[in-house]
Length: 230
Image 1 (tube, rainbow, N blue to C red):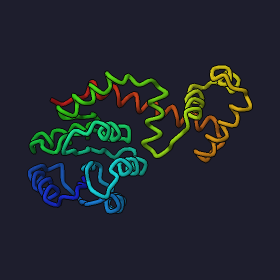
Image 2: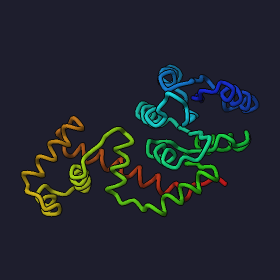
Image 3: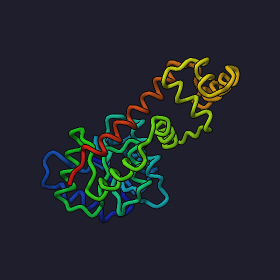
Image 4: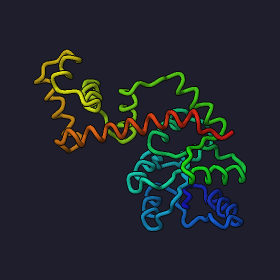
């Protein structure tokens, strides 16, 4: 595994913690995002621990980058305090779990093992925040798509988002126009703008991409309710 944390003492502590674990070891560490990307490419760890509050490092973008480089890698996010927006952003970016940094060593190891077994894990306080957020927001698919895109640095206007969501649903240009009270010509203009944003003119490919984002976002919402570690 790789540990990404600006506090060397913590990284050393994790390495010491795993000495007795025959099947787990820290192969490399990094103290910032740039170093983490280089170390990840060099060592290809199967699990990455990331401190979400590192200075001068956008941990969310780092998570996205690592997941885009290797979709199979597991990412466990460490947080010193419960920042709701940051925690939710980390999950949408692809984190497989979020735990408080103050966890004892035994619990941290249990979380790492659970993540490696394809579970999504959250420590108690984080889980409570997520359940509260999910129940309060009850995000519809359009907003889920919007959040997933934003977490990848893609910002669409409200109308472009309306059109993108309907594209994901497989709605024809004519029906999009009818639903949004627009002319077909205007709809085509919005679609052309969306194509330009994603650098493609393949409607089927773009629809598949949007559907993949929606499916993952919905799965994350469900996992937040059912895969909780006390």
